[in-house]
Length: 141
Image (tube, rainbow, N blue to C red):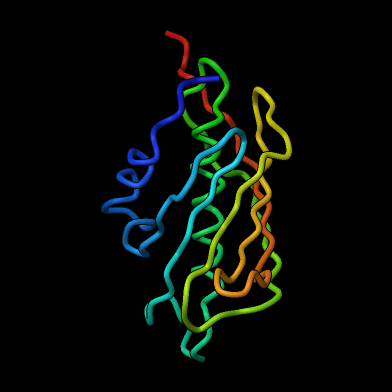
């Protein structure tokens, strides 16, 4: 495995991009796991006043993507998402949602990550998310 970026580096990585604009914060990077949170603001809501599914998916996808970066095989350069799926069970209008990404499959060419998104105040599951990452290596000269 490559040396993973620090917690501070992950939080800096989002500055100026969608994770930063939404306010996603990386809380913990562990062995084959990563925890992130999103404090809910009005711009995270859909016009109906409930949490927009896209906000939840962006949090989950960011957690899985950053976890993938922290778990790249030796010699790998990056990754790209090749499939994602989410099931939504609940919602929130305020507070903070938390995403915990866990490695399901860590191969040389693909990784699969499951992410559970919960309401921080009560632990209720908001969504379950799974994504497959294709591992990218430098092109041969």
